[in-house]
Length: 205
Image (cartoon, rainbow, N blue to C red; front, side, top):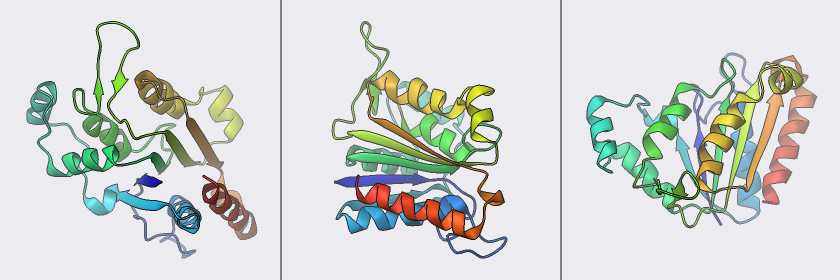
């Protein structure tokens, strides 16, 4: 199975080592996911948004092209091509202000283009996906907010945006969300156990 990972963190995918002020638990998760998937023989394709220098801002020219079912940005066009080749899509990012960071939002805005990634029919469900190979989507998030607060007070904003507002709208229902809360407050042993569990989970994907 070919798995496409979209990773969003300013420290990039290289920040998985436990080095103070140079570490990211999101990157550590990416490392565990990668090891698990490779151990199971899956083919991996990594999009590291910050390392790529992806611009999440939709310009006026890009929006005009978007309305004509065209893509101007070569990097966005490359991401679209790679999505069409994927059997499974994984997003990994931290939760900031209860939502995804700007580059992930820009990825959705620019890469998921009408007429290219989906169609909007006159009747029936809102959108129809053109990603014929894609079978499932996994999202891994890291947040400081306690899990119960994020769910019961804020109402799980990220799943509303990514799952209900994006993938279910296109007809995808095989969606998994793995949320890692308050990692900065946990011991090294606790964090290690979370990473080992994640590696095993994706080895069984």
